[in-house]
Length: 165
Image 1 (cartoon, helix red, strand yellow):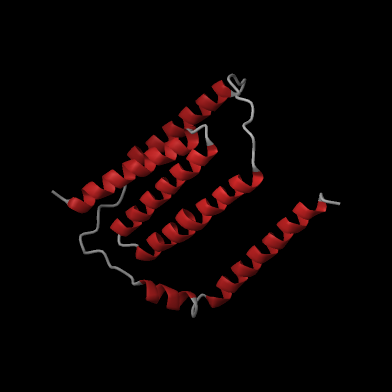
Image 2 (cartoon, rainbow, N blue to C red):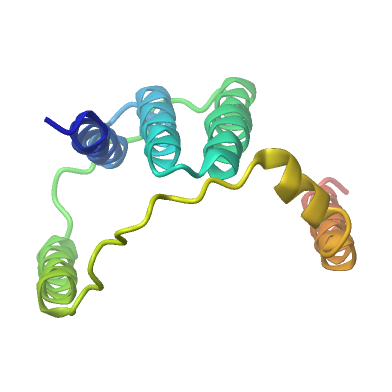
């Protein structure tokens, strides 16, 4: 029995289940925790596929920072429970659109001629090698992205503060 393959299917199913619970949960705090489970499951999948750097980024940035940020936002805003919407006129359209998207996804999965699995062993690239490449070969694009994110953050603060006058 191939243990990594079994682990891949177990964590893949767990991640999909947690993702469905995120979408269907009525409590936003529960949805945040389900999101954490889904993101950690994806990090484990990256580890099983020998992508250590992606697993680390997935766990630290998405699993840690984003979920903590979401939970802090929930605690600080003190949102009261809104009205429960039982019926919606757009529900049939949403069901049709969801089924069409599912049909498209299934047709892509089953019709696309996927390449055969690699016969050679997986080549593992160590995290320090990726870090060195990021800060030598890709330093300029890395800094440009950080400046764009800083400008976006400043813009968000200006927009949020403009309503306080």
